[in-house]
Length: 162
Image (cartoon, rainbow, N blue to C red):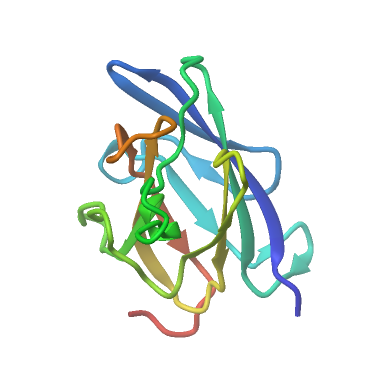
């Protein structure tokens, strides 16, 4: 069965102080100020009368600062990795968001647009699991990220809980 395509806008409202917002035009609910005040995205395979086997998510940046923020990637091509742009870890309702380099097979970056404004992520939603994820943003040529945004994910459809 096919995965549900979802586009989520990651709005960088300000960088001093850092202020972010998630939004989507689809049926994927985003709860503002969820656990610990973080935005929380609920992934439910049953939406709009149809069941899909997980999600293919496009996280698109909307940069209201006008400075040209994009997903961070190490400028050294031998070190560059999709995990430079996002970190993920399994948490409980009181968990802390992940550090750079953290990965989880349940929420994996699979590609990035050439302009580094869209990050593609696969969520098979196989585990009923709460998880933290973080995006890292920078400007062209940065050797380390400048901004970090750490929302929460809630997978609802797995048969097993980790």
